[in-house]
Image (tube, rainbow, N blue to C red; front, side, top):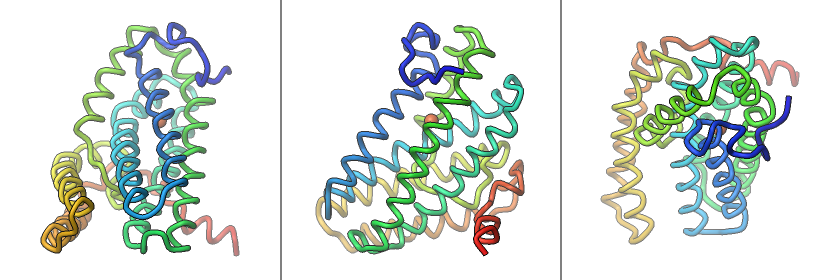
Length: 240
Ligand SMILES: [Fe+2]
């Protein structure tokens, strides 16, 4: 199975194929990770915020549009998508912790390094294994159709970590609208606060964060989740 990492665009269904769109985001992701590691203070915070606005809509569109198709058309799609959902779950949990950690502290650097490793692993799993199988299972027209649907969802998806909601439909689809509105409002307020420190903007953003936390815990938004998506306890059990 040949990785999609360096295959010509024509072999992947053309410029609007979901595989090409995914690969373009992965290149941007790598660029932002490097920039975040090389910067400090407010500059780093801005870069991490940009990273979140790329990572979470990208992952959400994968979970709600692509993975269900992969589970239908790729022979071991269930196992492969579950593995990636676990990585996404860990990334959501680590980013949630990062939001509560003092920027530029040792703890922050350690968490960010863990996130970086997981994000890079996620890209390798997709480009080297999952997407080559999807390429073989679908024709070019299907890849382009998926590309347009994936893009539409990505443009309107939540931009923040939400570790409590389901990583699968219907739970994640039901959560999308309220969490998107809250996340994108917080993005605006946080940008404002980074440009000119404002206690009011910070308070409003914190209020919206707790509202999002309350929404996440509505039971129906967990429907569809595989119980073994949450592997944090399993890992610590393995380590014992
Ligand atoms: Fe991806």
